[in-house]
Length: 320
Image (cartoon, rainbow, N blue to C red; front, side, top):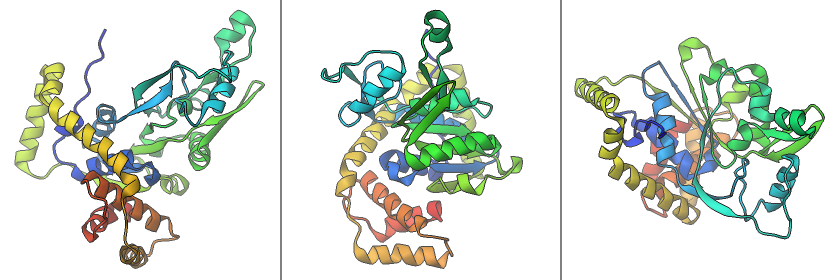
């Protein structure tokens, strides 16, 4: 049975800053994620879930739930295979395949075992074997971890996510299992400020922050209604209608990722970035670094290897 198509990213009406922030994070994971704040019905969740269609492909080890890189993380694969109760020959290259970068959704009420991982009870009961059952942090490695209503997340879950995000790895200490695996992901959170604010420690993990609201233009609101009705009536046909635009954006993102290492930011623009951060009374220097990385990602998205003042001024509100 085929999954119902998600609403296409390119078909979202308005919300250009939100879409740009998400695309920049896909191009440059150094941005460390994005927080999207806004009332209900402003396409926050729709945009994040629609990312899957425009994300690039990565090479992974076949049948590996940890999304490990076969080139740089093979030793970790041998260790994770052992933790899963499987055998892996350290001298034999594993079978690989290409797969879209994943958007892994973390439910607000998820348990620690579901998030961090725990014991595989089916193996324990059926075979008497103690093995690891990977959690959502394992599936999100080299991908995107999406938390809807992130401000309502349990404090203990926040601590687990913060530890993984800070170190790029997740440690599982459950029922006699002590194991550490890579968990390097882009964190994306959405929230309605009316339902409560975010803990400062978690807020600091997001490189970009966007506030969204409903469209004020009557024409856009009409177009939004028409598109939504078309999608609900014929999801497959609607997705096909925007397929060419979706593929074009996906190619643009993939090209930008390849171009990013060659993008140069001149010294005088670093001074401009530092000045913007100082004028906005930013605590610490993280905003300066994120602004530079965001400007480089925007330049790459536009096919340029040189960052301009316009790139900096475009991304500055998303950072500051």
